[in-house]
Image (cartoon, rainbow, N blue to C red; front, side):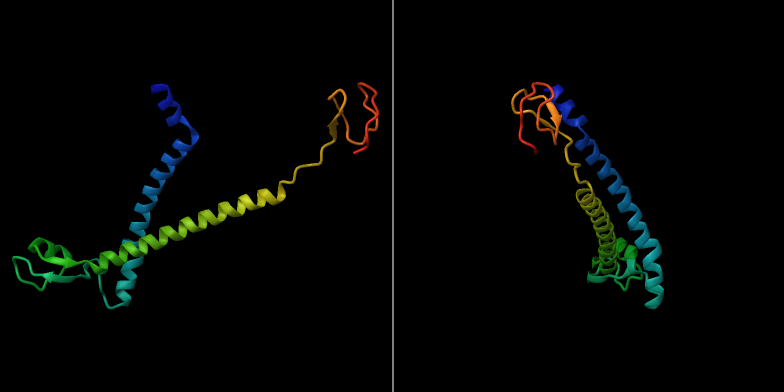
Length: 153
């Protein structure tokens, strides 16, 4: 059983999948930083100086009554909130990751399609003799090994 597990774990597909998951996790972190640190601040400035991480709706006041200036202040007071800004950041992150995966899959499909179209197999130059089964030229009418007459291809 241990040998079967080793064989399973060392197969290329499992290792490739593990590498893909690790790289995907790192890519997700980079996209999250891109959204939170690069894309959303300029959008917030254009919308009037809004930090999207602090866009929330208070459903229930906390121990200290609001209004709360930031999401952290609301959470510290124990308020129940709907975090609209964090949701928008997550949606934007998802769209960026989905777009990157789409481009990757599209590129792989294009490469696969090009290989299928351009990878024509050359026509064979030899064929088997029907009597002795040894190879002979495709256009031959007599086998050079057993000298049997054969039909031209």
